[in-house]
Image (tube, rainbow, N blue to C red; front, side, top):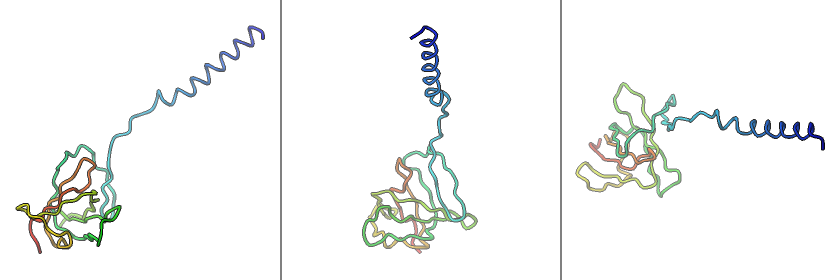
Length: 134
């Protein structure tokens, strides 16, 4: 091979390597967010929610089912009469308790029950505290 041909091959190889590396060099980090769904619209919530963050509201819809289901049915809570209900995904292990800490059957949580929701690190409901029953 001639020197000119070797130089051309070398330039082609360098060009191809640069083309392959360029997308990695200019990649932008994607913010870590989670999707919170509610009736009517979807909004993005920052994932800086701390473990154990609490949301208080009145249950508008909840179906615990007969057995553990994957994925579990969501619990829909309305924080005040002038806001839209928000649907929260339940974690795999959810504790249902009264305000004083006694366990409660999930089937007793129905529309009209006032609850506090506690969240895990994955922003799924891990604790449902019944504040006031209908």
